[in-house]
Image 1 (spheres, helix red, strand yellow):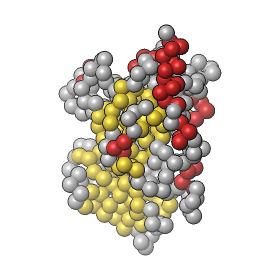
Image 2 (cartoon, helix red, strand yellow):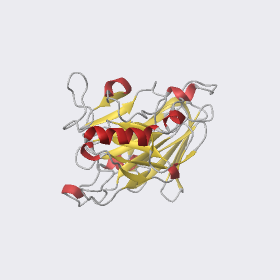
Image 3 (cartoon, rainbow, N blue to C red):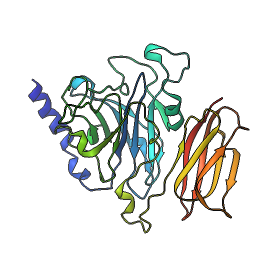
Image 4 (cartoon, rainbow, N blue to C red):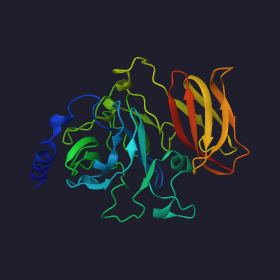
Length: 304
């Protein structure tokens, strides 16, 4: 029976695979998070030089070796060479058990929250280490990328050749040299070949991705990026660092109103200790303008 299921899956998903064989032309999963409690997230990366409408894309899971995926329709736009962070929708600070809220640092970097209600038989975004996690397009049968292997239940998690778990209690980041997703859902999943592994509940790398696709057709091969630490900023103070000199830092509230601004025209620097103690607790957008014209934004949670 399992062989018949796999054959059916092969026919279903491979019909359109030829269209996905070109590097740097289609979305793929750039980060995968299975942390403690309900901390679940996927980061999608756009390796092209144009924005992509997410309205024809889905994410989800193949539960416990199932051959049939549970999928969630996405919405919104992912910018050129940009990322889109999807997080499970658990934000009630009083929640416990299945309702336990996701970490505030994970909430701060989310672009969207999905699947607020947990139902064991049909909860696409409550994936564990033994669930294959797909990115699909169109009617959900065009497989673009996959973490794991369709039709296989590895037990607790998929492992490397040494038996080390990779897909549970970990954050996985796609290696910079990976230029497209794994559209063959039936091949063995060898995580160490395409992914780097970070400890459980590591969220600092979400919201940006380094990929060699950026250098193709771009005059400046240095990837423009920045990071903030810590996030959440408990004392409303954080270190902003960038790959190029910073021209200005702007902070906006959730209504889009500018709440703070720092300019560096006279003293260019790639690092700045940003103090925001005059702002109220909450989520803000930090926009950094870099030399060369790059403008990058990330969410930050300002704590008490």
